[in-house]
Length: 289
Image 1: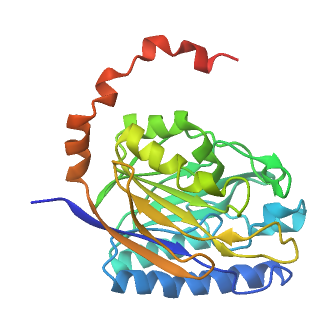
Image 2: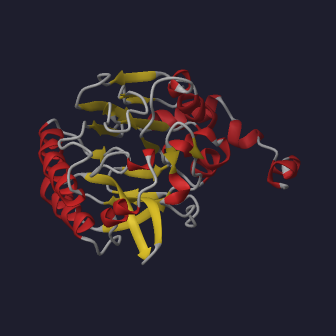
């Protein structure tokens, strides 16, 4: 029997202006996603990922300590606990990107992974952090991730996460493949302009080099008052040959759904023997300062 898994990606515009009270924005976005998750479940989605920092705006467009109020612990915090309930209710795996508090003043850009029975499996913390114009001040808000490159053995397959700016670094993408990932999700907040052409270049390249599926999620729309650019949506799945299977809308809410044949991974790896032909003994230079 083929191992067919129905994957889903949610991209969603802000439901409240970014100038609204922080808790009001958070509550509104969580309520919106509760409904979108239910819609994805109605479409038969079995593994579902939300966009980066899903319950707020991309607040890294400015440096303002008020956004620290969005942090909560993982998995003890209310959002992760709610998502555990929803995963159990809908019998689907959820990848939930949140703003995590480890200790007061120690915060991470994190994604919790929850199995289809509602059990919390673990988390990934964003490893690579941008800090640059026109408004990606992430080192003001987050510490670099310190949990390595975990792969989570879910009911529907081996799932991993690589968050936004991480996608520019092939080393971690390779680690996820070597650790056994079958589906890698990349929840993102990226705007049109200099890097837009990379959106459909880098992640299919990771899929080819490591022979797994990638679900790439980007938020849609513009976010005032910063207006650092258009978050252009176009979330997509690509297969282990790097072919884009399905693509979401550009600036609208969307649920992107694709059927992923996990047996294809073995078929592709038996043809392209990249893992067999690797030469880690020859790569020492890439980890030298």
